Image (spheres, rainbow, N blue to C red):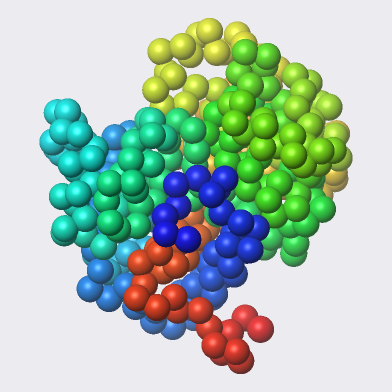
Length: 315
Ligand code: CP
Ligand code: NVA
């Protein structure tokens, strides 16, 4: 594993290895065990879109690993004035040890990796949000004790979150059902991937059908960053695609709710469901830190710092 561009590139084993490392790093942080695996290393964090969680968790994570993050807004970088990504990649590779980028086109992230010589991490594109899904899987495993065989459902837009959840959840052995309006279905590339999992995947335009007996209910905003101009159209299209008490009543009685945040109460999720599941949702947000630190260590440490036999503090 040289980069984290999208979950389609990772094997089940690689995903589980990252989740195990994330658990270990979380344990160490909570117990005051220093883990400076990236001492002296520098991560450039390019943001072409807004962020609270991704920015703060990557910056804090780098400090906790003994390294140094540099926040790079596209408003200030020459990339924002049209310098080609091919050149940016080659220049930044001469200064940095890794790049995290949040942008629009998935091709920009793939090009950074292609033309640069350092690890690239996708911090969200219009196509994928792999860091978020690693945190989501980590959280589900914490609460449920396993992933294999659980049913997850996603209600809403066929966007970056839905794409990465479909891929990540199927890869780790979960059953996946998604409900979206007909004009907001996920990308063909993702549907083709999901079709190889047969009955483990289901897509419908009925939220109730998707949520039936679900162990985990996911949702996300109706209008992602870049889509805000269509909000009125989307509010009409997504009416009924809401995670509310009525929908939760058809999921398993102990079903979890996950939301990557920011949430729009009264649109994709009601206040009452969000508050009833706040612990799970804010643990999910916290786990961004631990999951991303695992990615940083895996990609940027000179030698991956996996615990030796008998040294795993969790076991
Ligand atoms: N979930 C998530 O990526 O949040 P931010 O947009 O705040 O980074
Ligand atoms: N789908 C949302 C996720 C935000 C974290 C967006 O792209 O804006």
